Length: 321
Ligand code: GA4
Image (cartoon, rainbow, N blue to C red; front, side, top):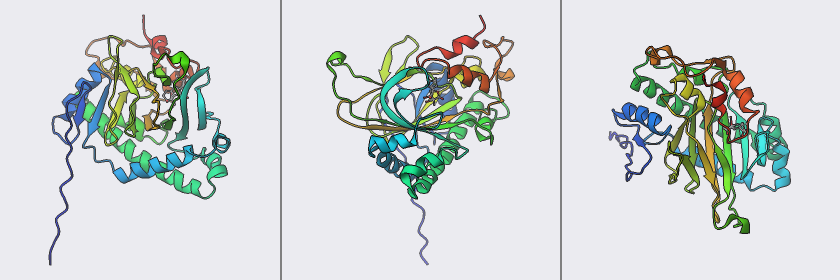
């Protein structure tokens, strides 16, 4: 009998860019992860083992949804807080050249909205989303555990347990940036697809098709463009992780610019804690330091975030003076 050996997992390497590129298959990646969170609050990961078929499947479903007539898509809205949204972002007057689906990760309260337009296919759409979300949550938890190792914190699930909790208040988002016509008032500059902001949660895991647009702000306030890569995932430190590390990790300000001719599609998992969770620096990271932040629960932070404008410095309200 011939026993066929499994093909070795394909390894990828990429030319170096400005943004930290972390190969998750390397034994020293935890040190690089910590450094990236301290310096940028942002990094790109490769060799993550995420099933590519799942990405393709979800991308196909998402494009199918976004290519429906607007009148149909609006039936799946408004995003209050889950459902379809067009141009309006959040409840306080922010707008962008984007349409999106905001989805829950652990309940199915958005299901009825899709049933009305997708009919039987709603079931399949939700199944693909659920599979993607459980795989991306697994990756987010592995990264958070590597970060805990890199910071030498015990137990290593101190961050990941918040995402694993049944009550975890996580969100999943599909963003579609249609090609944006050049408006005379834009003076040749790109329009804003999604305005600058930080993410309130613990960690965000983004994957996009090969279309550029994502930018992050450096500590000096300069914006840099992140070259897209459909095989990579891009990770953001969120406000809550900044607080839990007492400011050692930076919640990164980011935004998306539109493209004149091509559609950009991104899928983002925002890993959040349960609503009742106290968000405070981990004692083992304080080493005699005082907390830089007032005490608050995720519920309180979220409530305050939803009163803010996208570009606001939301954490500012919770900093000790
Ligand atoms: C930013 C991160 C996530 O996309 C999001 C966004 C939310 C929304 O689009 O409804 C918010 C924004 C995000 C932060 C401030 C508030 C809330 C829009 C807005 C103006 C889903 C989230 O959790 O916070």
